[in-house]
Length: 229
Image (cartoon, rainbow, N blue to C red; front, side, top):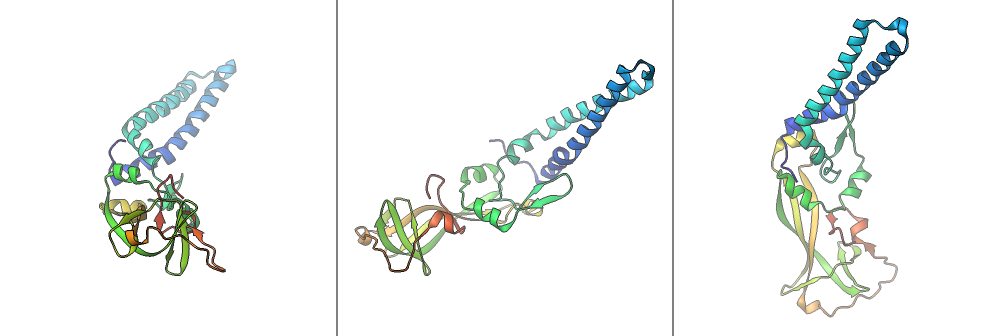
C-alpha cells in the first residue's frame, strides 16, 4: 500500500478523474468522429480542419497521460475508501452523499489494515461492559442494555470481575480530510470478548419471548472481525 496523499491533492485528483477526464473523452471522441468524416469524404478533406481534429485528439491523449502520471496514486487509494470512513463519493459535478443505511452496512465491516496504512487516523482502545449470559452453539451470548445478542467468537477468559467488549476506535488526526468527507472517528472495532474466568462454565439458556440478535448484523456501533459474524 502506498502512502496517503494530501487532502488538497486528493481533491485535485478527484476533479481530474471525475470531471476533466470525461470532458476530454467526449472531446476526443467528437474529434475522432469529425476526423473520420473528413477523411472518408474526399470533398471535405480540408487540411486545416483535419489538423485541428488531430490536434484535439493528441491534446486529449497527452493530457490524460500527463494527468494520470501526476495523480496515479489516487486511484489505488480511492479504491480502498468505503463508507466506513468517508460519507461521500465524487461525481462529475459535486458529490453523492451516502444514506444512513449504506453507512451502517459498511460500518459493520472492519477495515483496520486499510485505515492503518493511510496514516491519517490514530487508534485508541475502547471498552464496553456487557452482561455475559453463557455460551452455546459455538456462540457467545450477552446483553448490552436490555438487548440480548450472540456472536460467533471464541471468548477470552480473564481474571476480571466483569465481562466486556474490547477493541479500538480510530480518530482522524488531520482535520483537512474532514473537509472532504472523511469521518472524524470510526465506530468501534471489536477485537476480543473478555469473560471472567469464574463464568467460564456458564451455558446459555433460552429466555421466554426473547430472541437473541446476531451482534455483527443487528447494530453498527461495533464491527466484528471480517471472519466473524
